[in-house]
Image (cartoon, rainbow, N blue to C red; front, top):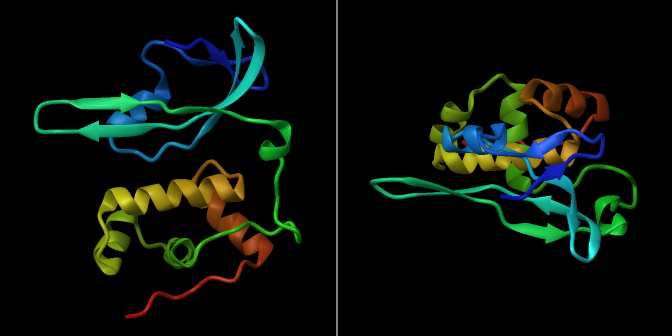
Length: 149
């Protein structure tokens, strides 16, 4: 167990944390920046969440990487979010009001893959919900791609 806090000092990593609980339930979770104390002094790390599942159990893994201020503040030259073609397609469908399960069926992807793309979109846009991401995409007039039929 890692005891970590966010930039505002709120406890993030603890037994029964909401990130692990949501991941176990199949919801997409975003990477989280943590401030931790180590024997080498305070560090800032980014923690990801991966769920590994077999027939009998689910295992939640939290890979951790140390971040630097430069990596945490890196942006595009023009300040626009960097979205892949697939992310632009999925965001287009979210703007159209299509749900993740329907997006998965339409693009012949697993629902988990679609939710991972949605989590990446939320992270890239700096939003916390799909609705907020749609509003942000409209606000920025992002170029979206309609998926091929």
